[in-house]
Length: 245
Image (tube, rainbow, N blue to C red):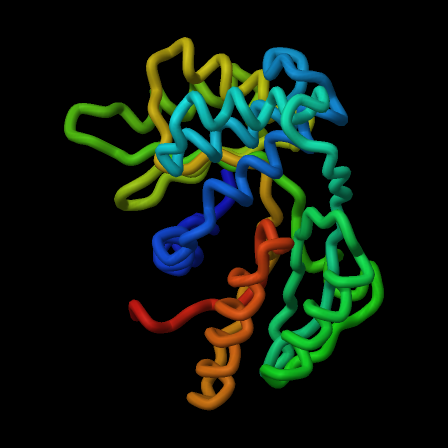
């Protein structure tokens, strides 16, 4: 097993960002539609769609919304054609940033993302400029409750095909290869586990602390500015947010 849980470094940031995302349902619906269009409408045979639905359920998105989003992938109710693009760059203090977008007009989205970097002390780079600093993983997080056996969770996850299981004080983080996410999640669902987070994501290999208060403020504003953009699905970075320390 690996050492310190990556979840420990990102859980406070993630909770804050998820709570403030007023248009979360719209963005997730777009993600579901694109995943269903590209890989088919059956989540049992489409890992990307399964991950998108898991994310929707984690955000308490109603089943009717999920079903409508899947129907849109077949052309029912929408003719929009979205494509996935990931932009890369550096924020203030050299923080690596990846911005995952779903857009129907890259000529609108690219300048918007570049403006966000420029406005908040960063700069947008070329494809591949920071992605090598992240690992593409399936990630599931189980909250530890009284009576739960960490060793049993570990064995169940490894038997299901997980790459790594990382216990922390309050949670157990389970990491998989992206292509194994679906089968591991399904196996753990059948064991009766519930998850406080479950998605295919990009995890920083190491995190970087910002010591300058001005850089911290700029980094917060950069994340806020990007996430307020309708085309931006996720913002990944390697900033070790020190607010909760």
